[in-house]
Image (cartoon, rainbow, N blue to C red; front, side):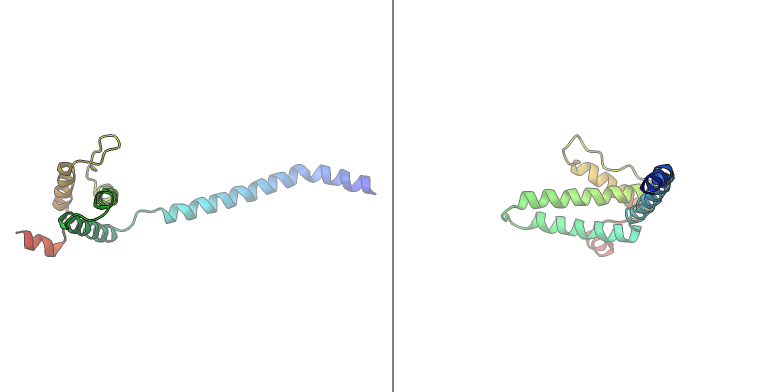
Length: 134
């Protein structure tokens, strides 16, 4: 009796492995699909709001008198700004800011990208700041 059960288990093992493999593959595909949905790029309105907020924070921090850790905070803000700026460039088919190795892009490169985005209808300074500057 025990021998018959062991023999039956051994004969059904390849079938069980195939079924288990299909189940695992199906779950893997579902997880990958869910992650792909979560990693989709945000809407252009969200990117615009983030750009304006980060640019405002950069301007405010640059104009503030020296505070503790100002350089480190400026570098973190600038990195976040460049990341969001690159996302906007991908969405609007603009060449993103060019980096030189690990160094952040020069300000002239950021100004070029901002100008090109402005020509495509996305003003990173915001409507109220554009009128004040004019």
